[in-house]
Image (tube, rainbow, N blue to C red; front, side, top):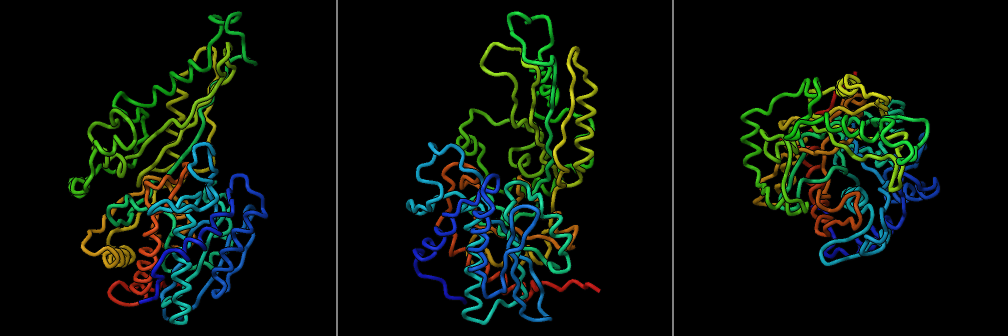
Length: 455
């Protein structure tokens, strides 16, 4: 068993240096992003780490070779973070890691700097105490995950031979909740677009022109309202194409999950829950696709008829759905509803991401389960779903032919992407111990990861 600090102070002090770098991929300078990347390189110096350039922010590569006979894993994570949002909503400065009781608070501490830091400490401990980890390890830590990883696909395709592996393990992707350990068997896919409705050439005075021309906001409201039935089901022909009904067996598994609708509702601060009536709340979260209106804009709090109105829409997809077919179906639905005096178009964003799945019998899931059972004795390991989207997983499967195991010690309630992001301090050392057990299990024993033939 590797040595892990008896106290958390040294870990927190070091992690604070990392969090202090404001690596906001949306608007940080190249120098700031490079500083964060170099911090990681310093941590991984024993593994021949280096900064590599992409068409955008740099990424970090490293590699440790244990044996030609050992399996190879690729550790994935990211060093970029979300913008802070309204600083007035932060209890403490976002880039000053602050201890508050049993948690640490700061932007990126749980998404994804803290979880990546856990892996770095385990790798260092193996090198210090045993000469290196028990299997071959490659690291790929990017700086653009929070903006959709726009340059990752080209990079992975260009370096596919160098990145070849038998399994990807992601330090990104939070556990379901802090009360029980969990592994994810699926992450949902994603497709996004904007619905644009245009009327006159310019904004018009609502007194002088009101009642004589069509209002784009009125038309947009009609179209948006047509996308759902009264109980929240998507009312678009073809949207559910390819979706497999939830089996009785899966429904029974989900029914055994300890989930309290009332507590969930109270946590969110809403009076009632809403969605497809024939499915439970947790079934909708894990098993069903969604179409959500993320924002609407046009005009403002002044007396005009706006000349353009927009709705920004995202769909989270489940296995069997094709992103292109989904947005094609939505566009047909919209265009079949012409609006007098207005023009309508669907402005598609970049190509969508299909849902990702890994089978519950995969050696990585079994090894991950064993690791969590050792760290959390007496607790069952929940096999859950990530309702968000991690595009790198389908990319790695397509290009490298490797499945991805989500093994993060972040949890979903830790205000990821929101003000006052935090991480539970205990998860640092729990994560270190679990990563150690996982690597040993994949290297040897009943859950040994088999090398993929690349001939």
